[in-house]
Image (cartoon, rainbow, N blue to C red; front, side):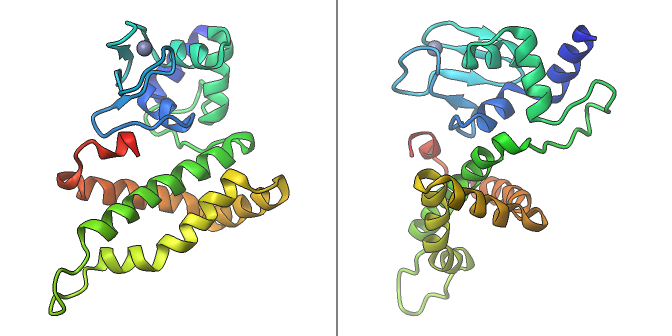
Length: 202
Ligand SMILES: [Zn+2]
């Protein structure tokens, strides 16, 4: 049973997905600041497995989660299964990632921050350079959305529990936050030529 769970979890979740889900900032090339040693520039490479060029830590997604939370491997496998809604009999390739309530707030915040980063870069890159320029849609969206997304993200960071709960509730309504996540991922990919690894040091 446990062996099955190990296998299923490893097949369903990459270390990249786990790292993002647990709040690490991951660059497009899969680099992140290593949580296992004092790392000032991203030296941990994430993929199916992970490897740190700084401290040589390596392993699979279960090792990673165990080490990150200081728990045993079997607890890590159970945690991943819970957080990513995985059961051993579910088809692994089609596993839908839907975080459980206790991690939903973190998840929402991560999506908002990704979106915020995108908006900030749009405001910079797509600003009209002359009065005759046609306004780029991305610039317009950035101007319209920056204030409220900043507010939501700040609220989830600083506000008291009741207010944070309310914001999470709003974000989950009709799966809005999941749609936003998909949207941000798609747009980030489209924008890839502009990316110079800046996402990892924001
Ligand atoms: Zn390291």
